[in-house]
Image (cartoon, rainbow, N blue to C red; front, side, top):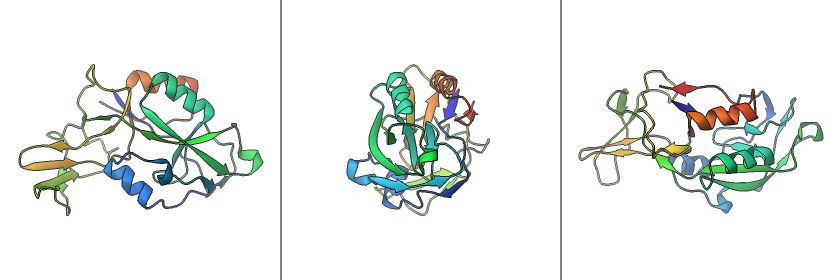
Length: 197
C-alpha cells in the first residue's frame, strides 16, 4: 500500500499564505535550500500545534518530536529547515519546529491505468507532456505495488517515454505502508489515513 503524508486539516485564523517560488520548486521537484524557506511565519488558530502540520499549500512542518520520528523511520530521506513559528503561547506545544523537504524520488503512479490529459507546457525537449486528469487523491489515480527498492518516504518522479513525458506535481509526499503505520501509532489523530492500492 501507498499512503499520502497528509496532516489532519485545521481551521486556521491566520495561515502561512501563498508561498510562490517555494511552492513552484516543490511542484517541479527542485531540492530546497535554506534560503528558499521563510525563517519565520506568523500563524494563529484555536488549537495546540500538532507534531505534523500544514498551514497552507506547500507549507508543511513538524515539531522536534515529528523530526525525531522521521529521522528514525526514514534516515537520510528528509531535510529539515528550522523555522520560527510566531504563534500565541497557548498554541505552542514543542520546543522547535521545522519545515521539511523529502529527498528521495520514486515512480509508483501507474500511468497506463490512470486518466491523463495534455499539459500546456511541453517537455523540455519538445515532446508531449501529460498530467493526471484529476487530483492525486481521486480514486481513478492508480499506483503500482511497492517494490523492495521503494524508499520509506518519497515524492513521485515523472515518467519519461520516447514520445511523451508524464508530469506529476512533486509537492505530494508518499509513504510506504509500514512507515505510515509507525507514524500514525506515534502521533494518533494527526495524519489522514489516505491510502492507495
